Image 1 (tube, one colour):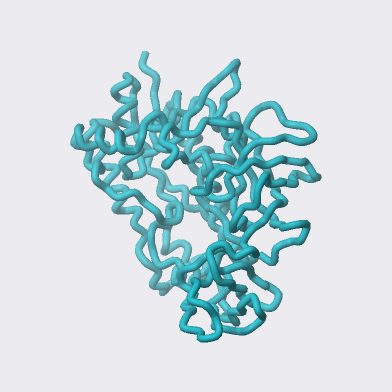
Image 2 (cartoon, helix red, strand yellow):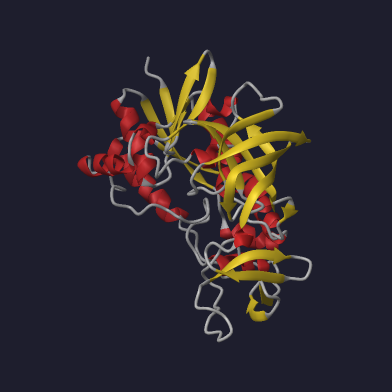
Length: 378
């Protein structure tokens, strides 16, 4: 009897090819489309029934997923996870922005939606396996599941999977994790899959690509304030601290100052108490660098938990290069992370993800960053 796989069919090319590959491997395949955002419902929660928030592109994605399912000859289920997304992902996302931090909702989407409630629904549909279009791999040794980087290092998505557990990785398949993106596109084109030439999404998980500042205004009160250079002079006005992240260059609207050089300006810190955005000139401004961080809420994927000190590598942003680090347990799930060399723009609220070669060990949330023992004003 063929094993049944439920694929998270998102309407993108990666999940579409994942479904195709599983069919080629002889599985019984069905798709499950996740609807996680409802603008009308969320506006009602906020008490803004006439809010003119942009229409979410999920309906377009659903139609694309439906076209793929019909092309492949598989059944497509559709399920609403709107309340679960609001409770477990979006509320946290907004609260972090209110604190002046920069959260990563995609990691929470995976932890609470794609690899939790999705699996519950898929299991009710008779799933033996759960499949996703992520660029990642798994390897099982003596019953223990290891999460490995995707073959395509430029597309590897283990950073976003760092909060998963052994249980969530059991019976999980990542069909495109063994392929480079170019090969995934080629397979889609050669087999006339409807999403073959669809552009990759770069928007917030399940919210889509939209004017981010206008979107946040629907949920958070913003207060403009001064932009202050590293010499203490006020040189502009910011629109609200939540709109800016450490190391940001775009959107500052600074320039043409006779008393400063022509070097570009970057966000180097936030003074939340005084509502001040701190900026400095040059991409390698010294204030942007840290040599140590406190990381909280670490999820450790392997069964063995380290004791004492542990040297490995880490990513502090999705596209960042690996940095050698030494982990030291502090208390209450907090770890002191000491860098082998200074790292630029380590930002509270973002994820720190740890690796041992190809193995993703897990990750946590950056609480604060330091340089030479001094806490950064982030």
